[in-house]
Length: 149
Figure (cartoon, rainbow, N blue to C red):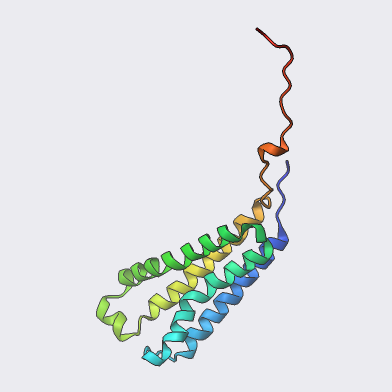
């Protein structure tokens, strides 16, 4: 069976991922560098927007895979914060990061989520849509040729 690139799935997932990344960056920019309590909503959207949008792109591209989409999008969201924190700790010491408002961390989260979402878009576009699973009821009953005694 020949594999073809599923442009519809790619466009929906990648497009949603890009929209989510733009929304995340807009929210980060809207804080103006402030990390006050009044900015928490924007900072949460900075971390959450891209995986959330990736899920919806995947959901509309392949609704049968909604649970896989939810699981993978959650994993992207959950693990990206740890990877971004580790990247920040390798680049900037703790006091400098705190003084800068964890700028490296928030930018790293956006980039990691964007890259992961685009990887998902390519990976899903290269796979065939999930087929319905055949059950035993769909199979014909075996017929015995002879009865041995």
